[in-house]
Picture 1 (spheres, protein in one colour):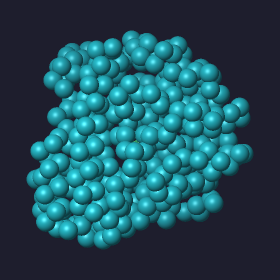
Picture 2 (tube, rainbow, N blue to C red):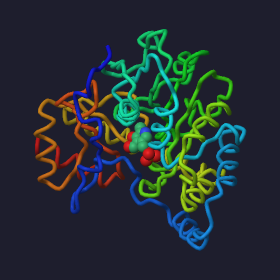
Picture 3 (cartoon, rainbow, N blue to C red):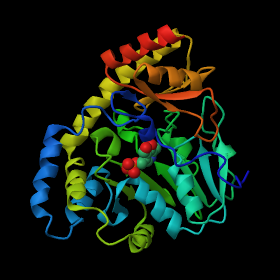
Length: 342
Ligand SMILES: Cc1ncc(COP(=O)(O)O)c(C=O)c1O
């Protein structure tokens, strides 16, 4: 069904739920980031600020990391810029956004004047490719998806790609998954595929604005033509290059393994309190269903803990909350507080 007007605030994001003094379970950026080695390299780039940015080395590094050619890479000021460029350049006849998911892709399409059709997956948010209209010529889906944390199989997503359709897979959280087995980032063979990636989450660089997309050279050129010149700053380019090295990828992978363990333990603890945790979580957060979630969120806030409301995601309602997965101690603090409140 074409959603006539945004019925909810698509521009609400978790950062507005955080405040000084609150323990942050609302934003999914990895705690303790950026790592010192990365911060130092970004800081060293400040000596080069007099020159205009040169995207060449970062683009080559991203291409090598995903086994692509550099002409299949467009560096962007975060994934957010990628969504805006796609919305401004593409001329979809039937644009479909698979929800619940991050709301900026839909917001960008609407801002560019495109009608948007929603395919809303019911809990537990397993993607059925048959739910996507066959004649949709633009399909946007997240993997793993924010806020559900569900990881769709690569084969399911690949089945959505076809000539005459642009398939945008938002992989902003793909590096939460050890080995990234379901990522399509290296699939140059799939027609119309656009993979969007972000450095924001795993590397703690939300304020820097660094991301990129991977697509066929023709589409990359069209998007680059629409992109403001020098859109990605020199420090962001340095970060992109440094986060694409085999050493950085290995570091992210090691973190992702630890995250999997903490997430499983946290999910079990929350389930033990009677909360319904969306199964098969694969990202750095959990989606939880609990009657009276709005009240619970307010009470948690009064106890110094910020979680993300669920009702601003299409397909969810007042009974949903999203919580980041932190380290064992911090997760335990949340579990204890919830146990008291429930
Ligand atoms: C799924 C998803 N994609 C993309 C983004 C935006 O990433 P960036 O900071 O790179 O623009 C977010 C931020 O919350 C997100 O949750």
